[in-house]
Image (cartoon, rainbow, N blue to C red; front, side):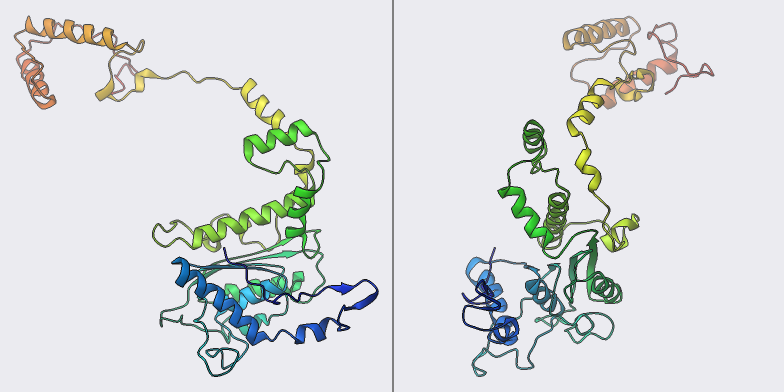
Length: 370
């Protein structure tokens, strides 16, 4: 995992004694102007190049939240903020190669131009660095109550429509979590770890041990964990190269709920008694009787009971002796084909007509099942 510091040690931090400005007396837009889009793009590409060249990474996924989410979408589209993107910040030296991600996850992205990035009239790249057709899987997570431009529900709707009409998509999924605000996912995950449990400690411990979950019943935390699990699965699925995942893409799945814009409401989890559900399932479990009469004839031995190995050896020995009396001589050296041929020959002679084979299970028509 590579996490580049896009602001190079100078993130936005409001001065508590001077609201609207940082400690250097700059407002937000003035601070943003100190971090050029071209330089930020270079840093992202340099991070990907480090993964490939130093660590031998064969496939890359990009993930970003808020401002970083917008950059992740730009990278996935093959769009660059400068026409001289191939050069480094000095404008002379060749810069790092493009990221070319196989998967992209953006949480409530901001400061991006969706129409320039995606859709039939996109300004991104249709080919990757090697000249092959761009093929990327994109997931975007939005908050239903978000009011920041780029991350609002209307922006989610626009992004979904554009992705739906972009031939470069290997797969796509855009989800809006109702009743959530900007930053809910990473804020919710942090709160789940830092805040004391508000529910039943015993139940929380049970959920952690049995399911690996946080044990939190808080709805915000639940949505955060769902967003995290979906995103992790998305990156894991679409960055596999040597053992790629096979199956139907989310955008083509018969369950259209995954293609719907709005995420299902998970508030029911607040009152869900998982332990009670499991205990009830155990208490009400009913064993089904095995219908031995429908066993495959190749494995049909005794419809009344399973036999121990010793009992089976005795049964086979008795059967061999019985067959000897009918001039059917079976030896341990005979293979399955030879035994079958000997029995078929004996049956054709009528030597086996008076042998008793035990209870042959019949159906309602008095015909043997097999």
